[in-house]
Length: 303
Image (cartoon, rainbow, N blue to C red; front, side, top):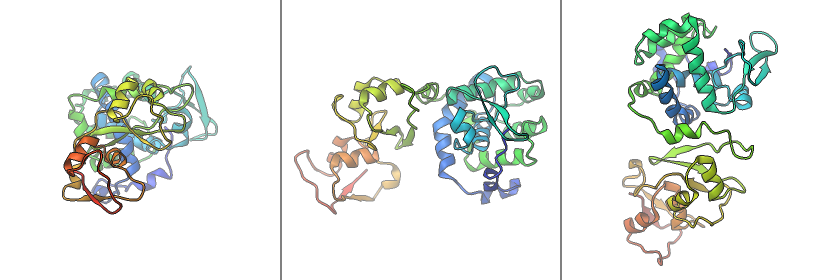
């Protein structure tokens, strides 16, 4: 497996040090983006979702390693008889062969198949999917990685981010999982999907339209426009928030008792999009109507 020398310094070397391990927003974003694929894989292959995600985070540097960015290889799996596309990188030896995939989903699927078909990992499948510690130690004992602290590092990640909760999940968001199966549109990479206020969103890129986003995500572009309270033919500006499901009526609970103070250039629509709130609800909470003007410095309730 690909060794993450610099990455490993982020984690302490013993289980007792878990509480000291620092939370990292990049790792949480990786979890939010791929947890539904991990759960889907668990349902199909009986591999704990927590283990799949912890390995993905560790092996790929939370999706930021050269290997992952160049080949969608999230688990550092080398060629080993692989007949598909490949890339080469120095690891234990110079210019080693690593598997390359068309999408993140393909990498997660091949990781599951790699473990399920490997004789050395067979004993792991007699463990319960809730036994993440047994899986982590079993992977290390079976030779998945050469790092002597590999099992402890996986367990640290799982405990810090409470990934073990995913191992008892009864279902998963098929929308997020199916998005990861796609390879992009017209050769362009997929938009990273982010989560906020119990919803999913992306940032529009230059040239995006509701139609092009709909084709990528697999949702009717008319619905996406409606979720964002826009006409389906409206142009999109680079950096604009585009919600992928119907917005909430209120901001998250963290904003209870807090106000948003209007800044120069902000509109009610801009504020509603920022917090993932329906525009009609934002007006209603503040006893305003579409014809009312807002002023710089004015405080607006968000829930």
